[in-house]
Image: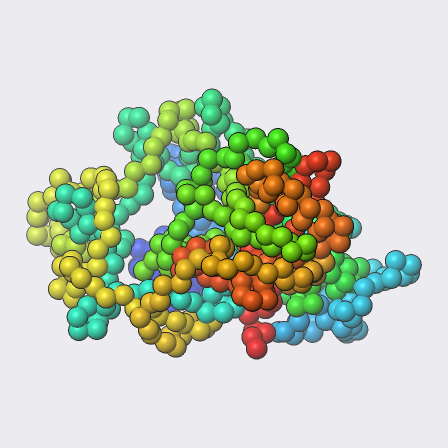
Length: 357
Length: 234
């Protein structure tokens, strides 16, 4: 789809979503800048990360009427363009025209061979590990380089070949359902939750407060202008997000590697384009490491790609960092109040299952 | 308060030992672009009164036009004020705080549809049960365990005295020899769910261990859910 047409479709989508005229107008002006920069005849599926970087660095995105845009305006332009690209990808507007391919069945991520499916490789049966002496699997046909993607796709690279999965975040609520507490009044009607200031003067309903960072002068500091520092106040180096670059798969690894970590987020993966060799390994239950970093971060956020009988999963983790302890172990560390939540209803859990109404 | 668990081992021994949570990555601090320290604050944008105005006018643009046209005085004392400490309250249908509200537990299915309402039940934690726990004997290889469960919490199991050290070291060595995790649970067979704190969601618990000389590392893994696709509900 041409990018000009895709932009119109996105604006129609925003209007259908009930966005305000102001929001739609801002999006229209921003996408017009993008279309003018890339050319109206450009295919949305051909927009690459370099194109986007070029646009974000261009005068159109950084200046207005010859004057530099405010940092917040620059961030707004980038946010609108990224949101549009994510929606195009979600809707398939940014897909390249490829030969017809067999859609991935809903229940199993790793499927038996599908000879007519060009980009989706043929793995071994899920329960039978691939023998060590197996002859090399035929290389999967080359897959078109994925266009710029955010969610819902995960673009990886395995032994030089591009890999693409569709990902869906899963958690306990989506698998088993949700349990929550609500308050009701004497007539049995549900009550709204709010905050009451300690002086008893103001009732603050949801949405009536703003979270800000302010500096010593009392000026507001935008989140993207914040610099994380260490104990001495020195800036920490920030690792760039990996969302726009294919991530190299490392492994297979020993299963115990993931036991040095705790899962903080889990995505179920559906193969879109997976080389045969990787599909075979995942079907045999192999574990891989992926440099997955969805946003700017000063700490590492490793992730594992895991094949199971139920399909493939991306597991984002945090190392638990436990040491070995001996008979002369050091004193036990002080309590961590964040972890010692005595009543689970009072706190959200790791996966966002909020129990506190 | 220290979190503890009553564990049984393969030799028929048991002990109440300490659980240590993992250290979260600490956020060290923020500065602005000029290097000046910044602090977080929560400010008031609007109160119940101004929210009612917004509801009356429908959308922010209409409210803005009404404000410009009516030329009211802005409450400078409120707008932008830091909230400070606040208390959670419930509002009645007249918008005033209720002095007593009754709590109900709402159960929703995986699609988000409400399926049941009931008075909330107090579910106590069961890491230290009333009677001695049982060694489940259910060993899972590391490969099988990581392929079936999402281990969303990890606690280090540590000793507080020499007897507990001997107990835990033996347990870690036993699991290391078998390259396995053992199911740790509640109930007469030791395979029931663990409830790590009051009213918590039940979780599957597994112990994994390894040794290094005289030192050991024993970790309790708690799985919040199984690794499976949402559409594969049974």
